[in-house]
Length: 146
Ligand code: HEC
Image (cartoon, rainbow, N blue to C red; front, top):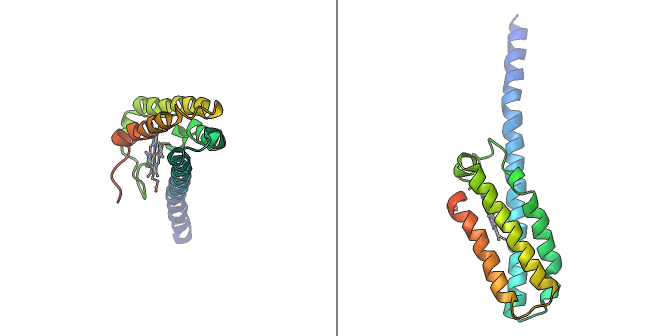
């Protein structure tokens, strides 16, 4: 009986920790992905500053589009606690979060069109606008660094 009881306790403990671990993996993976996006934006900024050929940034922009197309799915219910800056508003205002996400994809596609066209004159403003679109999601949905 005692053995049975501890087995039951052990089983329920495992059931509790497994999802918590899975959420930590989700958080780590999305943060790593975002750091990659920041690196890509820094690389593109260097091209803007040096007035380089916008076409050279098309691949990085395509990568970011792929990342943000799957971005909302990286915020499953329960992944708002732990080592994360994700604010509860992501889940209480899911529609707003998904709109901010969709705006990002739209903006990146516009940015990509400018890069593909090699439009050097339009490139800096398109870069600025892209950065502003990152901020438009961070303000309501990302908490301060900790
Ligand atoms: C739809 C919302 C949204 C958009 C768009 C968005 N972000 Fe974020 N970003 C977040 C959230 C939420 C977090 C916090 C994630 C966490 O801590 O779990 C975050 C975190 C980050 C971090 C911190 C990563 C870390 O943990 O060190 C960086 C860097 C970042 N974003 C860069 C960007 C850049 C650059 C863009 C635009 C190209 C962008 N983000 C667009 C929502 C967004």
